[in-house]
Image (cartoon, rainbow, N blue to C red; front, side, top):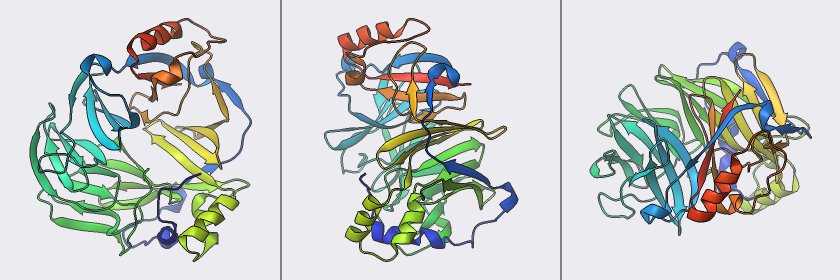
Length: 371
């Protein structure tokens, strides 16, 4: 397994400051990662299934690796990497290409390695290598709001403040800025130099109420009313979590720490998705993936090793987004679909997806509604 972060500095996650955190132990639930050999059909946890073709080829676009996806005002916003460059694309809810958000480049008005995009006063705010920039819905540059040359991959807007999620890096776990870029507050301040994990998650569960996940912290925090509140604790059964393994590694140098990680099996969360009703997690033990679905109303947990599409016999891949309507969004590249052999199924339909992909070579979003 490859790690995209600086191991030697990550160890400070164990000394997470409580200066900006209100603890409520009775409210904290446990997310347990464990092995399973359970094989589940789609129909056991999915009630509806459909496909959205992202119309790349007819717009002379090059389809790359979809790194993330989100819905903003019912539009599908794709962040994809093409030829070592990252771009933001906007599609309608039925897959029609609408526009690029900004142009790739390092000049003023261009986007340089975008990390995240959010809605801001009916426009798009983009955090890239240089700062927070504003673009119209049609993708035109409007203005640079402020500089933010800081580590991090996610940000959000709440109560007239931009909040930048840095995980365990400088200037702190979370930093809060006014609209003019003036620093208002830092939650869990630190002075660490650190490159980031490449994956984290911020979920808005209600207006001005967010959950923050980092794979290098065993606590998932809720952020509301200017407070960070521990919400869930991640624990591993039979094997330690990544954070626990790093703690055992102690003060080894980066190369020795990486060797220690490779030689000691541990749990790592690859994907964390959450909405008001569900949590969907893809986690690994070494290179072996597992899936965990949690129904939050009664904390019912479903552990799955292998998922089989018995609804239409189609392909399964890891989801990248969970909508407010309990729908998982799963990008499927054309090469995954072409030549796929359909086996046991309840209904027809995936045959048309194969035919469509063979003609267009477009990627497809599989949309699955959780039960």
